[in-house]
Amino acid sequence: MTSTFGDVFTEMAVLLLVAAVIGAIGVRLRQPLIVAFIAVGILVGPSVFGWVSANDQVDLLAKLGIALLLFVVGLKLDLHIIRTMGPVALASGLGQVFFTSVVGYFIAIALGMTPVTALYVAVVLTFSSTIIIVKLLSDKREVDTLHGRIAIGFLIVQDIVVVLVMIGLTALGEATDRAMLGREAVEVLIKGGLFIAAIGLLMRYVLTPLLHQLARSRELLVLFAIAWAVALGAAGEHLGFSKEVGAFLAGVSLASTPYREIIGARLVSLRDFLLLFFFIDLGAGLEIAMLGAQVVPAIILSLFVLIGNPLIVMTILGAMGYRKRTGFLAGLTVAQISEFSLILGALGLSLGHIDADTMGLITLVGLITISTSTYMILYSHLLYERISPWLGLFERKQAHREDAQGRDAQGGGYDVILFGLGRFGTRIAHELRQRGHRVLGVDFDPDLVRRQEGRGYAARYGDAEDPEFLSTLPLRQAHWVLSSLREMPVNLALLHGLRDHGYSGQVAVTTHSLQTVEKLKAAGADRVLVPYADAAADAVDNLFGTNSKQPPGLFSGKSDR
Image (cartoon, rainbow, N blue to C red; front, side, top):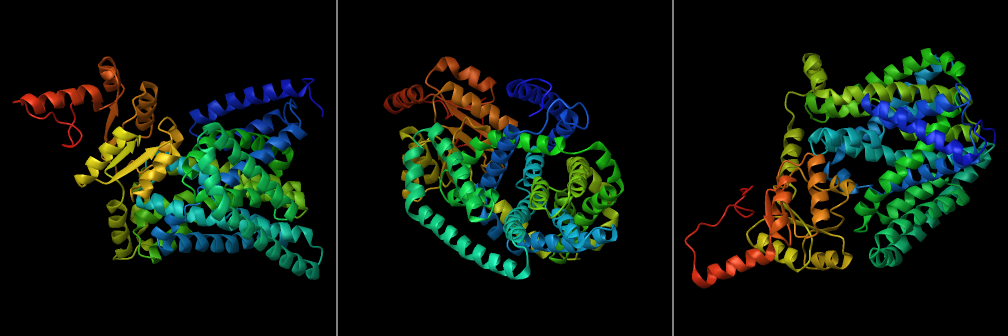
């Protein structure tokens, strides 16, 4: 390995420092870190300063990052969203993939590309970034809106399609003629069927009880999840599917367990850190001169993605009876290519299907579309107000489907999200349910969660201190978030996390000490429960009576703050 710093550790230190600085600039410009990290790779790579060269260490970390990315995608593969959104997720997802691929192919052919290269370019234009879109929708608090639900639905469909494409490309890469291609396809189907059957048996008889035991230790649960993702990734590689497919199936195998949210939340930071090396490695392999020669094709393809993809989605949603506003806001979420597009391009490069120039073109399209679409989504409502008079073409006169789904979206959810299912929390949950409230219980003890589920109550395994986990909860519908946990740091972390996620309902927390009440209220609590003091006051009231009125609180829906 060639390096101007003499050793790998120093080289990594420089790499991380530069990434932190450029990343901070990117965040200041409200850009996704993907753009910043590719820029870091170009900056420190051979094309500019030559500080860091591609090496085995960066490549290994990049592969681990890709494996964890696919694992988390599989882990969060919420088929319930696809079912609840009805045919719209499948129709818009598959329809957009089909039309973008067809139109993109002919554009690439018109630009002088060979059929195989044009096919790769067309396919990479179809996929949008789930990570970026969910992050932007979460920041704008639009995940639970109708257009947000539709967008997440067809992004899930895209994620499934991209895995199938990876399997097909891997089989194609190992075949040298048509006869061998057919044989490879049959082998892939057989091996894939056996692989999935084996995973299914493990899901049925091993994984859930095993995770139940491992969940007693947070660190061990996360360690097992990483080991499982990498192990199945390696198995997929040896079976000829690629490590990405194996890691994806590892995530799917845990998606039906009650621990998927907490595992996903814990792995997000590690995934993002390791993906840093993939994007840096990608940027370091690009040459500035090569990118300059690809500017014109990149602009043409980028305009198609930025304008054509939203138009395709708007047309499909309009035909299905959605209003132009819903179609426009959902359509903007596909106005960029994704990290999967770059991964597919890298796979094609490794298989010899495309050359470095084409990979540079794909990367340049990614930089243009991701950076531009970010601002389009951030200012989507303002953009809609400007051009809405010209969007009537994409709307039926009667949008019955949207009206029905809008009512369905508003009708679900829970009135109260309760953290802590011990004796105190369980008693509160019982009283709330007796009074007609819909309660979702959350606890980090798997036994307590299973006990609640055994009684027919909604319960979820999770950590009140984990801000990533809070983003998986239906906060938008909940009127109250209640913590029966009495640890001061836990409640403070919960209050800060709810504030960061823009929760607008009321919050009640619990404490042992009267001295901490004001501090918790200052941190954002609307009501503070002190079980022993409250019980003593109730006991005195029961013994001697009281003329005072019941203070406004949780059950009245008011605040005593």
